[in-house]
Each structure stands twice: as structure tokens, then as C-alpha cells.
Image (cartoon, rainbow, N blue to C red; front, side, top):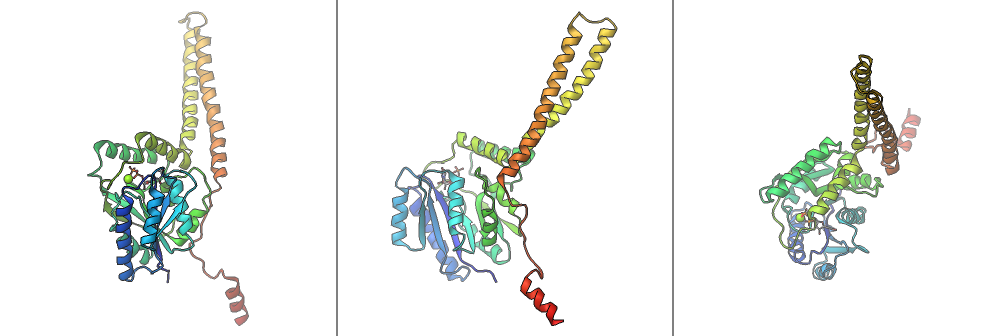
Length: 328
Ligand code: UDP
Ligand code: MG
């Protein structure tokens, strides 16, 4: 039987305006789940202050004083959403049996947590919160975000469609995550790599309760680039494909140019010049592709990701094995 201590991890950057309301709703949710007997009384909400410039940490300190179910962790400086989230997950890892991560701005429906906990209790290790609709997002945010998921897919980065960072993870999933040592973090791409039984919960994403988005277009674009480059080496592979393509075309062009030259249909110097341009171009791209292939391998090696995680073992316990052998 798995334990049922829940931690809700919330990264916060300049969120003083929404925090009191977020804390109230999450505190109530925790109490309701405790009263229903679904989670243990040791469950907590953990706010991670990501080096905010406003009064966020002071607000968290005050909230903790008022309600001991609300805890806090203060990062030494701003390290970005993904790092703040990871810090919270790792801090909660040995205290919790399951952790739900969510944003501070109440865009994620707090009530979807019930279904997540139910699915954990039914055996899932990872439960992804998936947005059922993006009605409240602006047309721009919706189309750019959906284009982003499609592009990621095309470039070889596997992600769960319309899932951001609202998810539940069991302790063993967190232990799996801890083995991914990479510094360039793109959690929503790494989590599916962990494996284990997973499930999804649909919810409607609302509007930000208060304050401004901490992801302006510039940050969103760099986040997208981070996602592609940290998950996949397909862009490098594309150079190799292009190299082969141009090299092949160059062979055709050489044959054509030599044909023109042989039939005397050219100006002096044109055939040799044109052949060189195509051939050298193809050769350069092909060589870049070869370098890219090695670079890609080196890049993936340098991440030191776990190659496998064992889900279950049967009869691998040394003691039992010996005992059963002496028995017979
Ligand atoms: N956040 C953070 N550090 C940062 C930027 C954002 O911890 O450097 C947090 C922020 O407080 C929020 C979450 O990341 O809880 C998501 O940010 P936001 O809601 O502004 O993004 P959006 O929903 O607009 O994409
Ligand atoms: Mg938000």
C-alpha cells in the first residue's frame, strides 16, 4: 500500500498579489482532502520563492505563521520557473508520497487535484493535467502555443499535448526525475521519459487571477528553443539530410555541366566554376552533418540521463532467493 502524504509545490516569482488567494484555496483544498481521508495530515503546500523582487517571501512567511499547512522555500536568487519548480519537487521528495506542481496564478483548476489524487490512489505514478479548452486564452497565445506543441513534435521532442506543468508525480517518479542531471531543464519533456503508469486529468484553464504573466513573448520563444534543443538532436540530423540532398544534386549538376561542356554549349570557365560551387557546397554541408552527428551523440552523453528505470522486480531479492534454495 502506497503512502498518501501530498505536497503541492508552487513556484512563485513576484506573485504578492495572488498569493493570499492561492494560499487560501490550496489550504482549503488540502483540508478537504484530509477530511475525506484521501491524504495524510502530514500533507503540505510548499511555496518556492524564485528570487522575487517584491514582497512575495514576506507574504509566504506571514502565511506560514497563520497556517502551518503552508510552507516555504526561498531560493538564493531568480533561477527561472523550471529550476524553481525542480527545487520544490526535490525538497518535497523525501517528505511526500505524491507531489502536485502548479502555478501560483490560479490558472490551473485547483479542483482537478481531487481527480489527480484519485488516479494516484488507483495506481498511477504520473498524472498529467491537460487543458480541455483554451477559450480564455487570447487568440495569439492559443495559436502560438498550439503551433509550439506541433513544432516540438516535428523536431523530435515528445511532449504531452496541451499539458503544462500542472501534474502529480509519485515518490518513485520523483526519484526517477532526480536521476536526470541535466542543467538545461525542460520538465514537461523530461517527465514523459521517466515512464511508469501514467494517466491524464482534463481541466479548463482559466485566466490569471491577478498580476501579470511572467512569460512575455521573448521568454516564451527562448523557452521553446530550450525545449527543442534540450530534448532532441533532430535539428543536427536535419543538416546531415540536407548535406546528402545537396551532395546528390551536385552530382546531377556535374553530369549536366559536363554534358553542356562536351557539346560545346557553354562559355569558357562556366562548367568548371559551376561544378566546383555545387560540389564544394554539398561537401561542406555533408561534413557539417557528420560533425553534427558526433556532436549530437556527445551532447546526449553529456546529459548523463539514466538509461532505464526498473518498475518491478520478481525474485531478485538475494535473501529470498537463498532461503528458497536451501528450503528445497
Ligand atoms: N515563475 C517563476 N520564476 C520565473 C518566472 C515565473 O517561478 O522566473 C513562476 C510564476 O510565479 C508562476 C509560474 O512560474 O507561478 C508560471 O508563470 P506565469 O503564470 O506568469 O506564466 P504563463 O501562465 O503566463 O505562461
Ligand atoms: Mg500563468
